[in-house]
Image (tube, rainbow, N blue to C red; front, side, top):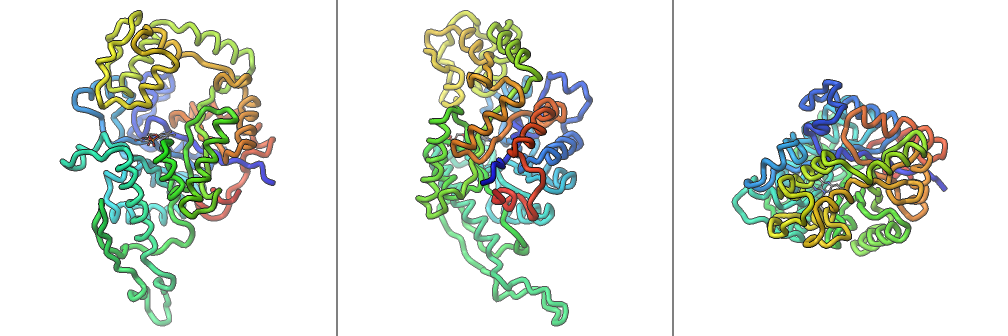
Length: 438
Ligand SMILES: Cc1cc2nc3c(=O)[nH]c(=O)nc-3n(C[C@H](O)[C@H](O)[C@H](O)COP(=O)(O)O)c2cc1C
């Protein structure tokens, strides 16, 4: 049985001034130009990664809190990753590139045609990370935003519509016979009418069929509705879960059941567990980093407060570090997941902000599974464990600078290869073929 695992890289703050304020900026990259991402993509391909996923959110958030998002560039500005994709395809030959798209922002016919174009241009290497954020609804019309599950219902209709459009050229529709001069057979094109709850349009798609698999559908939502979406539609699920055996096995099982429920093979969805390791050259260095992180200085706490302020759309930077937060500050718009991450095990109403932020600053060791700081060998042990517990691979999380990639991958890649966990060559075909190769 193969031990090979799938590896993905998640560019976690999108196509923006990621790393603002970080030393890597001293390399003089211009974040609006493609070169830095092209170089990083080549490194990922050399490393044997299956796919690069680029986070996105089309919105800068609520009008009252825009400054919190852009002040330190934690939540924006961001350019559209779909339009970065062709530059990355041009720089690579095998890597799958997966921009994030919200179905609210791109009507199905336009989406199907643009994705078909990129998939052809790249030799079958496009994937789409389908997200259902509803906070950006105001940019796309005056309708009130859908609820959490309603947005997933719309996303399912959208993915179904894309696939019907991609399949609207039946087998034999593309003739391309030079002897008769016939290029295509219009009687084999499906001029269907789509009239459903969220979208209305007609087929067929003005494109040609794919020689191989369709663009891969990727999904990150972990709620019960999110996993039902994955079971029905996804080729890859990005899983955010505690990385202990029970949690990983339970997550895998939920995805398996969701696939079976929708008539798909139990293992149709590749599940990649998200992790952001800090790879050190020795365990002593890892111990040192972990010890130092337990006593963050005020500057570190302020930086974390600024990042949290962007995620929570609530200004924490003006709050007294030594008093509990005024919980009335959190409006309806605040994401419950982000709030849970800030609160951790504590009581929000009585815990001083310093304690909450210090917990967020604290790192743990890979070796004893209290966190993700450790040597490449310790990380490879984790990858092996995840594989044994039913995972299909890992999603490494960070910015998309070659500096970050080298820091994370230089020691790791040879060790993963030696242990037979990381591919040394790509399968013929595109992203979906590589995902299915093992
Ligand atoms: C690994 C990962 C990547 C994500 N990427 C994005 C993204 O690029 N854009 C976005 O709006 N939301 C992103 N999300 C958030 C999810 O789309 C979703 O809104 C969130 O997980 C809540 O959905 P749920 O209630 O189904 O879990 C991501 C989540 C995870 C775990």
